[in-house]
Each structure stands twice: as C-alpha cells, then as structure tokens.
Image (cartoon, one colour):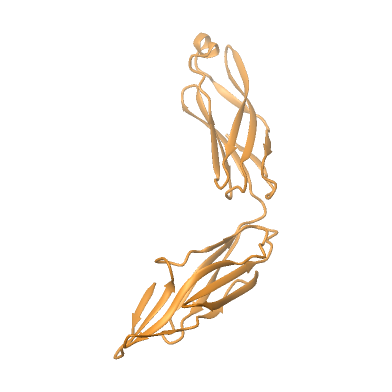
Length: 217
C-alpha cells in the first residue's frame, strides 16, 4: 500500500492492496473462464481523522479482456477481470488505475498462458552409470502427467532396454526419473555404460493443453 501526504495539507492518501504489500498479478489459463478473477484494493483519503473512500479510475487494460471493472464493496474496492479465450501463444499486459485526488497510479500485471504446453525431455548422468531423466513443461499442468520414455543403456558388452516413467504432479512444471546401473551385470562384467539411446514415448493425463513432445540429449 502507498501512503501519500500532500504538501501543506492534512490530507493522507492510502492506495494499493487491501490485504498485502502489493497487488498480486492476474494469471489466466488459455481458455477464458466466465467467472471473474478478483483483487481487492483500498483507496481512501484521511483528513483530520475523517476517512473518505475514493473510487479508482481504470486508465487502461489489455484489449483481450472481456470484462474489466472496479467496484466498491463495503469499505474496499474490487478489481474484477475476465479474459477472452487465447488460441495462440502466451500473452501479457498491464492494467493501470489512478486514484482521484492524489493522482497516483497503480499497475497490475496480467498474463494468459498460451494454448500449447510443450514437454521437453532431457537426460544426463548424475554420476557414472546413474542417469536422471527430466520432463519439463512450459506451464504448470492442470492434472498429473505421465510420460513413458523407452531407452537403451549400452556398453561394449551389450545393452539394457528399459523405460523411464516420469510423473509431473498437478500444478508443477517438472518431473524426474532416476536409474542406477552400478552393480548390474552389464557394468560389473563390461565396465561403465558408454551411452544411452532415447526413443519417442507416450504422454497421458491432461486433456486441457495440447502437448508437443521434444527430446533433448
């Protein structure tokens, strides 16, 4: 919250979040929800101990909002927003409000995720014969995601065929799977693993986003 004292006056202006130090940014999913997202604001002036509410003015906001309003609710104000569906990539913008009297502005960030949420698969060895497979998404997932990645671990003595089973928990962007071949017959008799071959796998769990499968190793 910003507190402003006017020069040569007893007026003190209060302007900002009603319940925290800053106003939290808005974050929308690609498919716009008809139910608004809200942020509560305080906006008032005190003169000689008398408090007067000041209706915030909306100066500007992104063109891709269906609904943008700021209304009074008891002794606070509610900034209420609804976004349109997003059928392309991530987009972001700002909502700018101004407090009458003090003419101080307040900026609230707003982001809407893009329709494509991609999964990147990577693999590295934490130490000899101990690979870790990582699946990373662009945005947090709405449901648990299961990735099954077939691979081969090989050296001069032969190979092991297996699959890395990776789960990305709901609300997260990363999941991992580890395997340790130290002590295995292939390593015991023929030495360290020399390489890994990864193949296209399967992804299941979340029907909200469209996933593209990428491999990096």
